[in-house]
Length: 404
Image 1 (cartoon, rainbow, N blue to C red):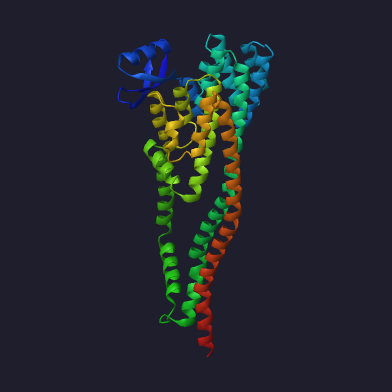
Image 2 (tube, rainbow, N blue to C red; image 1 turned 90 degrees about the vertical axis):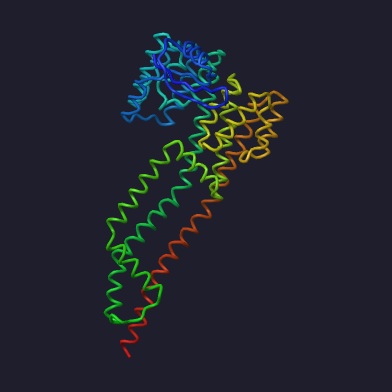
């Protein structure tokens, strides 16, 4: 079987790769012989990748329903293979139905539920898989699945709020760009012809009118080149952002933009708190929980901070200590963590932190939406005003000269 792994060297450098082995223990033993410390070792499935390439997709709503119903059936004492078979029959999503069918066969062949989920990384996240594994090890799978369902719902709700808040400015900005190109390439040339007919070739025009007509001529003569550069540039930038280096730089840029920075940090903290709390309550070790949580918060820069915090914890420090010196985690997070560490209730404390920051995200987004709407209207009005002043003023002036 093929396994993928993430391990650390003696110098603390992270390495990853894939290898063929009989089982997971063999991979761990082999890595240790090479002087590496295994962090994550999981089965790499070709079948899961094949399904991903075919474009299969599972909505958050389907995943929540599956998780809640599976939890209920396990709590009622229904055998796991039978529970999965029932869920397969009830699923309306054809792709998800095939995924559940594959999981059922794997469980019947002797794999644990967590190992079966690992074969479908496009459906089940690392957080989901690790919590299921912890639930199986602790004999509390039904409780863990309930928490997972709540977490998936919370994440979906937060994404929906952010997307809905960004929808209006995105649409308005797109309309503004399209309108600008349309006016400059089709309207301004006709108005420019009217101005030249009225004033003649030697007519003196204001500087801003000359600039507007010159820009219009340039766009009209180089339209194909401009569109190729725009779409080509957008494609290359998007492709670069998908690379590890590009993604890191993009995430670092987001943390430099004033308003965006606030939203990104609050979302990251909310995800960190809820995910870390869920993993800790499931019995996952602190270092493993930090490793999984870092990949779930959605920002590579903050993820690197968590990796540094994990190194400090590995050296014997409490998690609250490195986070107290963080550039992005507010002091309230480290203070709440300190209370949780002293009382042994880290998971309970962090759930409250997550609730608080999710409310903060909603408040910030609502406030941002109320500011963006009039701002976009002002931008649109300003653009129309500049164009009107550039062309209507000279036309009016030249008309009077012709009349005289």
